[in-house]
Each structure stands twice: as structure tokens, then as C-alpha cells.
Length: 477
Image (cartoon, rainbow, N blue to C red; front, side, top):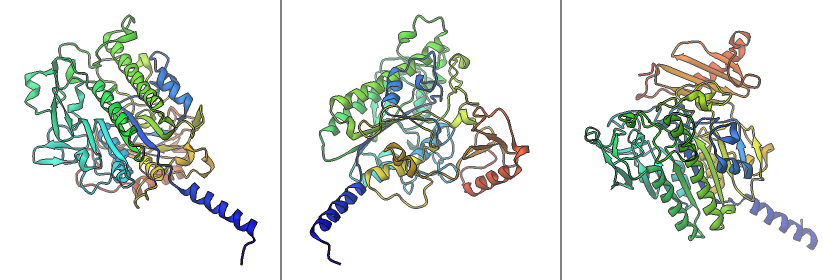
């Protein structure tokens, strides 16, 4: 059928609009990850004592998620989920591993990362900070960032080395960069696998990471035709447990800042000062985007790798770091895995948005693929939350369930499906605890006895999600 001239013109306009709507947005993407920051340690999530004005402002300028989850309850597996778009039942790295044997804690060549996906869309990619998924280890280099899609890397390879904020060296790509710090001789013999005790402290690693990240942004801003992906993986506020020797304070920070005169012990001043320092540096990055006039072309995400720690000597109850949630790091209750998630994208995300969408780290893969126009690989445990970010929540797909398993301190696993949360703290075997998060976000009342059908359903999800791995034993060994 031949269209009349007016109808043909209208058809052309509709066709062009459809094509334009389907074109990828291709923004710059910055993902900023804190280390061991609790759900309740930011002002916008209810914190009363620690000041976080820039992250609070970021939430006011963008979107805060109330039901967002880390990939795991400790760092290495959580970061593996973030990078690969696979949940804990499917990833290769399923736990932290100390010492020089990095076999279980290193990504393999066949593990496909977010950075590799974005390279397919011609993104420049950089990682500044803590990697934790590979090392220049005895027996061969494994899982190095530039083998996993990053053009540029500056930071820690081994997650135990990252315990020290004043290390003797950092890595730039595959080369050691000596710093002015001096590490105790007994720690130097570990070849960097141990966090270390710095006897001379001059170069604070966090500051170096932020400076490197800002330099990367400035260089990439000149490449107008090429978007970038920056993964800024901070170590704040993780404790340096090795660094407590001689001082008793594992909350390493150059100064206590606005908390110096507080009637708190030094560990508490350190914890607060670390978070406020990080907050100010996030503000520096956002201000840089504004100055470079690329803020509207850049989606910035901020989150934490797991729940809050109770290490380093600070008084946990003083700051109430998990807010209304039960549990902390190494727990599979909400406090161990539910984390802050703030997204800023001026001109796309309307200010002051709050989303109750249930998402998790694994969704970064599908989200970045949709943003960049790359087709996501099959077999992922990843759902893009771009519809939520762009104001189309009605079109947002949701997970049937989210799944976690944990191998330290005996096996544990957990699942969330809608309002229901199941936790098994004695896996294999054990009984499932059941909580209705719609009325009991603190997981104070186990209602498993009242809902045997729900228990059975959640146990079925758990069994379906877990694929055995030869390197990780479900008994916790």
C-alpha cells in the first residue's frame, strides 16, 4: 500500500524516533566502591554522627536505592559478582583467600568482565584502587586487571596487601611503583601478600587512588568521541588489622579532621574521619565532572562491597553502622549484604529519587551493556536497571530471587524472593530461617514455622542456584 505524502512523512518521523530511541545512550560510567561501609554509615541512609555532605547531596541530586545488595558478605567474591554478572552460586571466586596462593581468588581468562564488555563498545577503561581478583603470584600471573579488560590499573592487586593504607609499593599496570612509606622488615618478607605495619607513613594510598582517577577523567574528557568506564575501588573504611601494632588503631587515616576534638577514642575518630575523607573525595570527582562540563554525559554510581566491619578497635555501637538491619560483614542477614547505592546522572535522573527496586552487584553487567549498546552474554544472573534510572520503572524487569553463599566459619547461604528472605547458617544441612522483610527488615522474627510452603520454595531456589565448584567446599573448607 502506498502512503499519502503527509502519512509518509509521519511514518518517516516515527521511524526516525524509533531508531533514535533504540540507540545506546553511551554515557561515561563511573562506579565508586567503598570497602566495608555499612548501610547506615551515610547521612542519607540515617547516620547521625559521621558527616557525609557530598554523598548526601549526590543522593539529593540523583537516586538512592533502598533494596540494593552486594554480591557477597566479604570483598573478593563480592567484587567477582560485580565484575562478572554472576551470583555466588555460579562465580569462580567464592571467598577470600589469604597468602600467596591466588588460584581460587583469581579470575581466569574465560571469566568475562564488565570492562571487557565495555571494550566491545570502544570504551576506555580504568581501575584505580583495590582489585582483589588476581596477583603477580608465585607460579605465574593470574587475573591481572589488564587481562580482564582494563586499559589502565593503579592500586593493590592482592586484597590482603590492601589492608595497609601506607604500603611500601603499589602497582601501575604490571609494574611495582615504590612509595615513600617504610614497612616493618618482618612484613616485607611476605612479598606484599601481608598487609603490613608501616613504620614510616608518608603516602596515603586512598589519596593516590583519587588523584589517579581524577587524572584519568581529565585525560578522557578530551577524547570526546570515546566514552570511558572508571572503576574506583576504594579501601575506606576497611580496617588495617596488621597496622594496629604499636598504636592499637586499625582505622588508619592521616588526620582526624573535624573529629579531632571529639570525646571519642582514637579508633572511633579514625573510623569517622575515614568516611568523611572519602565523602569529600567523591565530591571532588563530582565537581570535576561539572567543571569539565561532562556531568550530564556521566552516570556515577556509589556503593559498598559488603556490610560494616567490627574490626580495627572502633566502637561499633557508637555509629550504628547497619542502621535498622541485623548482622554485619560475614553475615548473610541484611546487615551483611544490603548496601547503600546512589546514582547521579544529571539531566537523566530527576533529583531526589528513591527507588525500592531490588537489585544487586551482578546487575552492573547488564546495565553497562544496555547503556553502551553491547549485547549481554547469555547465561548471566544480571538484569539491567536502566529503566529505573531513566524514569521507566514500569518497564523494569525484576529478579525471581537473589542468592548468596558463604564459605567462612562454616557454610551459610541465603536467598531473597520478593518480601521473603531465607537464611541458612548451617549449610550443608541446617534449617532455613524465614523473614518477612516487608514488616521485619531487622530479621528479628523467624516465621519459618508459619509458612512451610515458602520455606520449601526458597530452599528450591537455593538448590537450583548452587553449582558445585571444585575449589570451594560447601562445608566451609
